[in-house]
Image 1 (tube, helix red, strand yellow):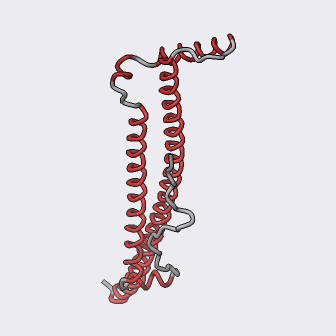
Image 2 (tube, one colour):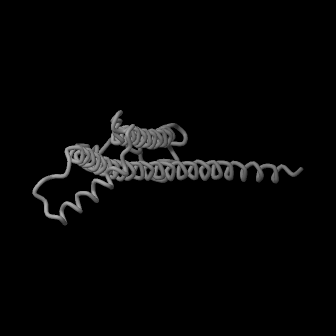
Length: 187
């Protein structure tokens, strides 16, 4: 083989290998950057889910608890008999309501008043726990991806590529007090 050709091949390889390495590292950093953005979006999704689920469940539970309280109040009135001093129309409306109450309640519920609202409260607690777990998982994924990117950015020789493409360290997730507050639950 011609020594000039061998030298030319070695020179080309010495130029191509660093370029290929640079491109591979750059692409890897860009992919990790996309992963960080995706994980950040996952946090936003979890926060939206948290807000939606909690506010809807709280309102539903409040509404059902109110309905249940009214139902038992009506049962108590029904047991006491027809209220006095009502017009015929009011009496008919009252009896229609009591017929509805009677149809919806059975003897077992009256004898063992296990309120359905208790199940709703239990479901509310479970849903809150599930939403919080989902949010924590999204935060952990984000911080994990940030850690991977930051490690590469500060580790030689990949830090050279990161500096050349102007990549900066990412911040770890910290809850913003204004936007990411817990939903207040009050009954």
